[in-house]
Length: 192
Ligand code: MN
Image (cartoon, rainbow, N blue to C red):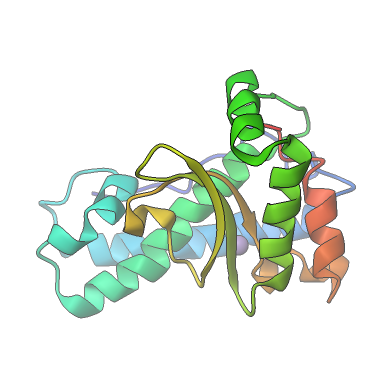
């Protein structure tokens, strides 16, 4: 089952000034494309796996894949899945999800508190990875970081909002100023 690089609903320069065109060209056009290609190369060996990558990730333990391919799928399939969500929750215009906002207020006390917890998780995570707002198995919202391209789907959680803290996501524009990148990102995360 061959998967295409997901198309963006906006142009590479639409997220300026918070996210620059050059970063978007590299991040979507090169990095996301590379994760997609490498994931396809793994899945080519398993033509029986016709589910979407998100479903495969959620039941990876039960799949009959060799262990090396499972590890590679966590990295490259994770890269495909995580970036698909990331680019999908970004946008030049807010499309606020009122139901999600209510739930965030119930779980965290306020939207600002959720953003603070997520920003802290993103800013303090050591090395490459992601910060997540997820719906966990008990149907509660939760914030935590993961390393590398590990997806929350691996532990049965459903990702809702994510912040990419790999240097490729911000270094061209923000260099080592990761907290400034994170703060600016909330302007283009359209759901809240
Ligand atoms: Mn990235």
